[in-house]
Image (cartoon, rainbow, N blue to C red; front, top):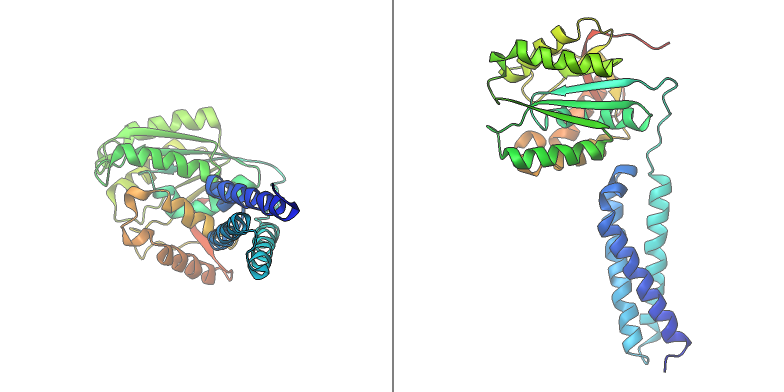
Length: 302
């Protein structure tokens, strides 16, 4: 027959188990809404696991030392407090856009957008803008195309991109299809009528990136705001003159890049390199962390 103490331990055990399941199943949404989320999640997870084990031990050992019972209760309180304080204190806060815009982001390969401007896209999404991403090739020469498409879709959803369209032009040979790519982009531009377009820079060693840049400028010749982003293959001629503060979003950018598991062995996708680039561009802009862009032209909303 359970006494009050055992009932309390059972309830606590159930609560801690539910919290553990919640964190494991909702890890991605939690990472999307909280800065430095990985530290908070793992800390709370470890504390709750220990608490659940201690509560279970007290439940099957009614005569257990009172210190075990106190430790179980205290750990549980600490774990839930860290989770609550972490969500409130580290929650991403962004001002809603006074006039929500339609934004088109174009990349040659499945992970180009996240590497180049993932922080900016996440922030623009949270501000209430409508975002569509267009990926010109499946990246089959740089990895498993099937995996890359799934990862690109998951990463886009994580960033808050509303729609993803993936074309099937041949990877590494986009420079042979500039006119065709331009026509496809123009169809999307006419349908979406974007207020802002992000694309590759002309100052890039990768022929696919330069091809997408050329195709974008042709297709978007009548648009007023075009920003060219930085990739790992941009040259020293890339000189950003527009910066977006991603101080709150650099962790989100890193998480979105890590969704591309097919590419995670490459040096330029490692968190320290991504963070270092953000700090460098931030220093140029007198900010904490930032992403830099070359403006083809820009219409300032004043």
